[in-house]
Image (tube, rainbow, N blue to C red):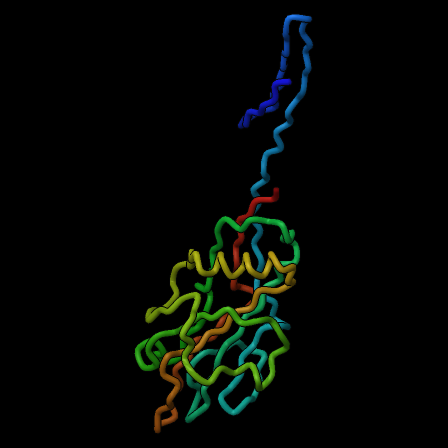
Length: 207
């Protein structure tokens, strides 16, 4: 008895007719392949004010997301939390856009404090332990200029994919400057983010 197989790659719904024959006769079999296309969707989510904020070097917590130096020795790291629970766990994240353009600068944080790092922070309630002591070795982004354009970064896409794949409800990021020393004159050098105006756009495929 002869056996065999063939791999097919239909792009649309296709009917296949298979005919087998020998010296006795022939037989015909029919089958239909239905192609289900992936659905691509984009969602825009804004940071959650109640779950965002900042943590100071001395472990004080504030509801305002501030990164930089506020006064003599008051070094802050900012946190923004996004709800990604509407994205199904099996989704394939195609791209992301992180819009930080709605922010407020006090002093010259990028001139005086150097680079800012954006870090994927495992979601949790902000407390004194959320403060990171040193500049991170692994970041989603490091920049030395004011964020005037949305960031389209593969690192953010990968981080969101990681959260979605494990069924996490939140995606949280941390901001901290390279230089966290303070100035003796107590000058303010920080960037303040507005959660309800900070947008994360996620484009994904639903299989």
